[in-house]
Image 1 (tube, helix red, strand yellow):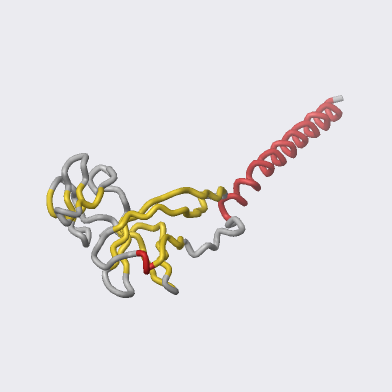
Image 2 (tube, rainbow, N blue to C red):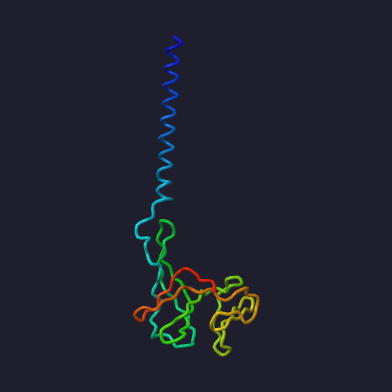
Length: 161
């Protein structure tokens, strides 16, 4: 009788261990796949077309609203965004993040004063993004910007200036 109950007990222990292992695998395999395998279509170059170079005047900043696509984990997001573009010469453009480096308030171009100004706390920036006045701790953040075939392409990644 002792031998029979020992066999039954060991059978139940083994069955519980097998079921626990199956449940752990059922949780671990999808988690590992999520962390280790890149989603399809995430090999984007990260650049968004925002404007034509011919639309900009050299030395006159212009705010541009555009649509960008980004991958957030496994979720693809299409969203509206804006940037300030400054055409520096015939073939070059600088793209600024539209948020002040002090507390991320949106700033604007003040044409008569010839500088960017943040209405929240009075920070002022030159046309090349350098701090002129106010509490801003650093120059305006820049986006990676390229001109290809007369089109302006910017990257979502910020290049702190």
